[in-house]
Amino acid sequence: MAEIWTSLIPILIADLLNPVLFAFMVYAAGTDRPIVNSSAMLLGHTVAYLAVGIVLSFGLEAASYRLANPKRIDFFIEVIVGVILLWVAWRSRSAEDKDPVERTTSLSPLSAFGFGMVVNFIGIPFAVPYFAALSQILKTDPSFLQAFLMLFAYNVLYALPFAIVPSLVAVMGPRSRPVLQKINGVLNRISAFLMPIILALVGLALLADAITYFWTGSSLF
Image 1: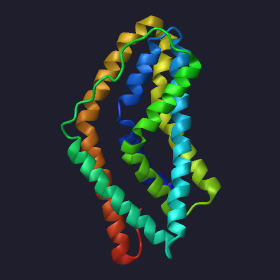
Image 2: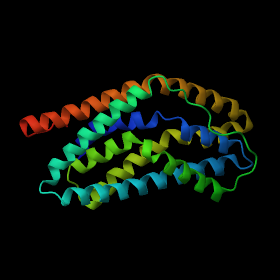
Image 3: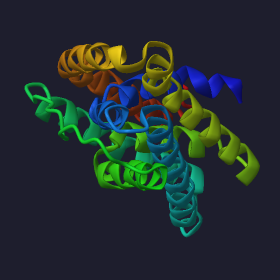
């Protein structure tokens, strides 16, 4: 199933271009235990993202099995996700991201872990690329173990870039905060420019894949 990553990687890139988690991790890096708290926040977010993916996968699979042709319904889901991606791309073309938190000095690792989970749960309704990734994974008709491993790998790859926050704090100490703030600012600007483009491209690719399947009986990806 290695070929599925040709469609998952562009979706992952679009998923990563959301500065909200990074901003919250910069916030955690400004607390009294910056390395532990930022790591705990990232872990909480990752655990929640994986759990939500598993739950949604079961939900989508259950919906599919209630219909006569579960594989075909996956392509209907793909059409819906593709249209939503195009709509989000259009709506976000002029959106401005703002730092959602102010600096604080006290946060426990357990609170940081829970905070990471809450950040994820709040953002799930807007995590359209993640839904696209789930659609691509389910389209391969995987076993539970295969689906779990693909979701796990996706979430690990998602988390890796954000590990720069505790890594920089470990290397630079207090000097890392202005660096992280600059990175956050750059990420905001890149996200504002690239997010609509990538979402639109992924949405068009999903629609093309589904239309090709309905027209020819075989998919592009």
